[in-house]
Amino acid sequence: MRILVIRKMVVVILLASCPGMMLTGCSTSERTNEPVAAPVSGTVTLDGNPIPRAQLLFIDVDATPARTYIAEAVDGKFRGAASAGKKRVEIRAYREDVSSSDAGSPGDVDPQYLPSRYNADSELVVDVGPDGAAALSFAVTSR
Image 1: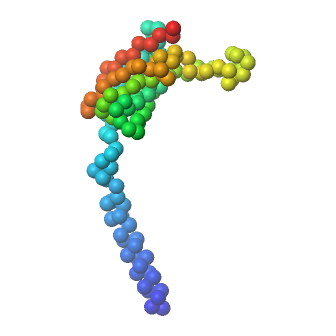
Image 2: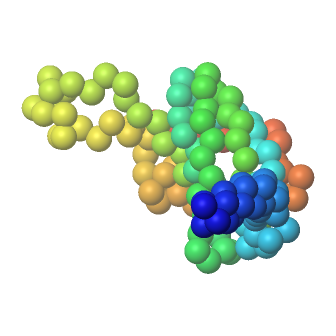
Image 3: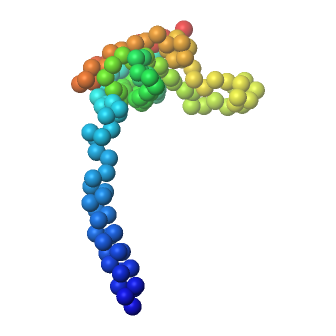
């Protein structure tokens, strides 16, 4: 009987201390190596028209390991977040209707249709300040 009472007391003590442990978990100040993300926004045009859909990747230039932040563009406008510092920007836009009739099989067509100078070989660079970067503008061409 006494063992049963002791077990119940241990369970009660553990349950009572759980909320305190959760509250004292990892705070923001303990994660000092985590960069603070700031807002980034702007426009993307393709051949002078708002791009229907695209992904913009903001990739750390000076940080190791490099972090990548992704912003989605819809109807030429994008909004996202990235840490402060120099970022290489990749812009990717994908075909929505790649079918086997396009080139034999779906694997034969790269659904990403922007030239590589805007993505894999991008030399686009922006500097994101501590308060972010608003009104960024990227004018890309299909040729």
